[in-house]
Amino acid sequence: MINHSLPSVQADDEWSPLRSVIVGRAGRACFPNAPTAMIEATMPSHHVHNFKPRRPFDQKLITKAEAELDYFAAMLQAEGVQVYRPPAGVNWLDVNGYTGAMPRDGLMSVQNTLIEACFAWSCRNHEIEIAYGTILGELARDSRVTIIRRPPYTLADSLLDEDGSKSSPWVINNSRPAFDTADFMRFGKTILGQLSHVTNQAGVEYVQRSLPAGYKIEILEVNDPHAMHIDATILPLREGLLVYNPQKVTEEALLKHEVLANWDLRPYPFTPKEPEDPVLYMTSPYLSLNALVLDGKRVVVEASDQQTAKWYESLGMKCITCPFRHVNSIGGSFHCATVDLVRDSTVKH
Figure 1: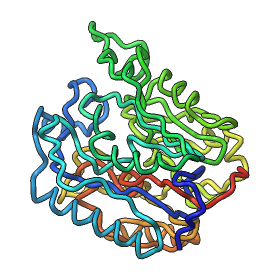
Figure 2: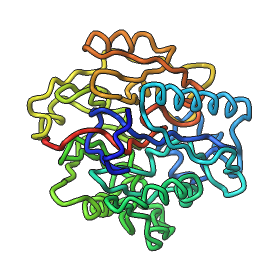
Figure 3: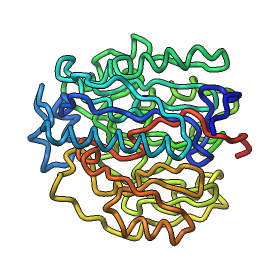
């Protein structure tokens, strides 16, 4: 049952009982149009050739992805979660965009604040306004809520050095704040984040300035030369239990963070196979870790991924299975496709 006394935005972690959420829509999704250097730094090498300007995904793929998102939204509603959806049928080809299916990349809730990403990729510059502007307007009617929209100066097209030089492991420079909100994971008053090919130090500092008082960002040391988003690297299933991708991060690196000092840290024990149909154009098969936890007891997993579901169940979780392979194909899974607006918790972390 929805608690209407709660603010329209109130969330501090990834596992407290989920009360309200945004679920994306694919629309007329396209391969992201970004500079070649950005694509090569982040996308699977065998699919880089697909990333061409104004190239839509196959319509059959999108139709199936849209059906999966609708099913997912209905499933969450059946579990008692209030669901917000963006408008249907957005033609991202017309605006040289990508999709509205992955709102986690562009919005992050922290306490009663909702922060919009300063995307590194210009094809995503107007994604939040186009797909989620109406929802943000509705949420902003709650006087207890602060919504921090992206400022115009962060639209500067200056992140690639003209001479092709790089002063860091990342393809983008530090000339203006850049970040995807999917590069951050909330653990109460501590937020773990990573630097990546879409998130720079100026972006981290921008997020820190935007946080409510008492919240802090700590940067996790991740071994991922193609880093872009942290939510297939670590997955807190409940308070005190975290699953991590041992190909990208070590237990030693995790334990450097006091917030995880007493946690049970479990390496994901499988090497997932790349699916053949539909293919993963934009991600690795480790999307198995990109799950949505409903309340520290229940977690949503892809319907065909039985080995992961059985393993999560061995850790004491109840798995709710949902078909999502076609959403996976266009760039993400359950965590990517959602923004949790309200989790019913009192911060004590």
